[in-house]
Structures are given as C-alpha cells and as structure tokens.
Image (tube, rainbow, N blue to C red; front, side, top):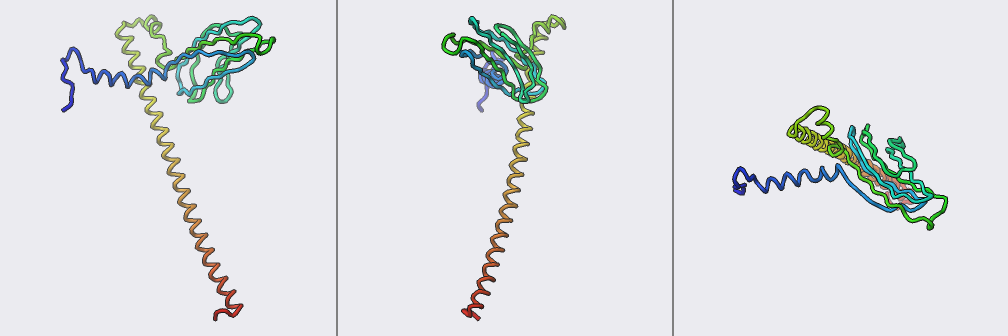
Length: 220
C-alpha cells in the first residue's frame, strides 16, 4: 500500500499538495491582472466568460497623457452596458452578472493630435470575481465574525463555487452528448435515405436498360 505514514501533527504532504493543485485552477480563474500599452486613437478589449450571479470587481490605472482622453466601457454579449467611465484615469468598478455570458472590457483612447505624436498609454487592469471579489474583512466587521468564522465562510463560498463549476461542466457535457446523439441520428437517417436512393436508382437503371435492349431487339 502506498499511503501516507507521516505523523498526525505534520499531516500528509502528498494530500496537501493534492489539495493545493485542486484549488489552484479555481483561484487562477477567479482573479487576474494584466498590463498593456494602449496606442493613441485606438481601442483594445479583453473578454472573459463568467457564470451567472457572480460578483465581479476590478481596479484600473491608466497612465495619463496630455490632450488624450481614455474611456472605459464594460458590456455583455448583447451590448448591455454594465459600467462606463469617460476620461478614466484611476478607479474601481463592480457588478453582478445576471447570466452566464461573455463580458468585454474595452479601453478606448482619443486624442486630436493624431497617431505618432503622443506616446502610448500604460494600462493596468486587475479583475476579480467570485470568492476573490468578496471583501471578507468588511463582512467580518458587519456580521461581527471571528477570524475562524471568516475563514470558514470563505471556504464555504469557495466550495460552493467549485460545486457550481462542476454542475456547469456536467450541464455542458449533457448538452454536448445530446448534440452528438442528435447528429448521429441525423447521419444514420441520411445514410439510410442515401442507400434507398441508390437502390432505387439502380433498380430503375436495370428496368430502363432492359426495355432499351428489348426495343433494340438485342435481348428477348
């Protein structure tokens, strides 16, 4: 048996590493930070798929340039504006998703001086959603929770997030399976229809050629 024989106080390193690897994908998906350069009179957008009823928070910092205005707009796939800020320089935003959708964060730079005369702007964007977006310190103050209770609340929210992710993956798997079964059924029916057409065409050719040869008196 390949088990863990370490003392109880020290715990099992293998199991600890397994739990860490299990939680890492969730944490990486829940928060990300990116920096990029935004040329003058251009538009750059970032897209991300987020589940339903998920809190999303973000913080941005745009390097200011003279005679240049940078606008920030966050929309969903239907074009509904979730957040909009003109002359965005530095700030925060937050919203809660109403449905599973693709969300787009766009920065647009405008300047009357034209391209090449103004240096590119450095944009720093940090976004969090789900468990990472919640302010547990504020929750602890409002609900008067102890540190252990706060940690348990965070683990409970994290577990709920993982369960929701698995439920969504199961739903997508069922949808893909239904699509595959529907496609296989259509291919089967089409194959049967094609075979029937070929058999019918072959039968018609036999009778036609037989009549033709009889008319030419080549066969009796």
